Length: 208
Image (tube, rainbow, N blue to C red):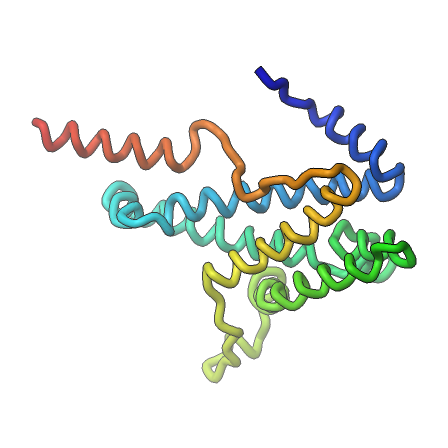
């Protein structure tokens, strides 16, 4: 049976492969990318799988609407943070642009920058919603003649996450000779378990 590495071992491996500076920043960013995928997968299990929306609405529509909005907005906030500038004023940011800065001038720096630019282009909608709706209450969006925000969809999030995986896996392949399946995050007692339990509950109700 293959053993699972501890977080400390994973971090040590990145430090050994990439060096102290790059390895430490990459590891922290790696954890953030894992979690944004984990959150998004839970969102999809509840709200994008055929039949699940009707099921959860029958058992707590208002609550699940609050959860839907929270998962959606937190995903946008998370993606916006991941694509922020390397620094804001005097504050240093953990973002993909920090990795671009750290690899600038290296042999692979140009390709890393190009991959980052694809992510940034596809993330404009997330930063717009963060700046105008989530982090701030934009007046022009709130008054009766509101200026609408750009359209947004699950497919746009999927495309952004795919570009983010390409960016991260460039580092994985270059320094560790592997790729990471960020989109295959697995856990127990997740949304799938909840949906299964609700279906079993309805089957028991129908049997009586």
